[in-house]
Amino acid sequence: MLELDIPGYGALALKHLVLDVNGTIAGGGELLPGVAEGLAALEGVLEPVAITADTQGTAASLGERLGIDVHVIASGWEAGDKLALVQDLGADSVVAIGNGANDALVLKACAVGICVIGPEGASHAALEAADLVVPSIEAALQLLVDPRRLLATLRT
Image (cartoon, rainbow, N blue to C red; front, side, top):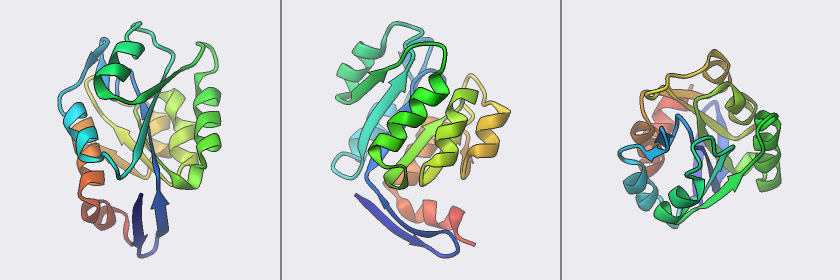
């Protein structure tokens, strides 16, 4: 668990890390640089879960490679399905990372929402819904590895 008391933002007790797959931790079905290392550095701190409609058909292999749970959802109402997972986990204990329009509900609902502007860019909806915007998944994971950086960005 990652516990922080951020002035002006509030106390956080983060337990889960919800990750969008396409455009966030993977591009074209391939894992992006720094993801495996970043998740390894968070082992025992946050419980990572990836969620995807598996557009590239690589969800199972990515999950095995990273040693994390991957929830495959049906295409059509991804935003609602992603939000349901976050609510089931307890939104106040979730930090989520995503980049797409279908991540906006999750980024807004969770305790900390991080929008990644990666190789696929980021949707306007995700940018507006997030608490933080970073240039890469590596940068997002590093905020969690060294939570003082997260605190410095979110405090008022």
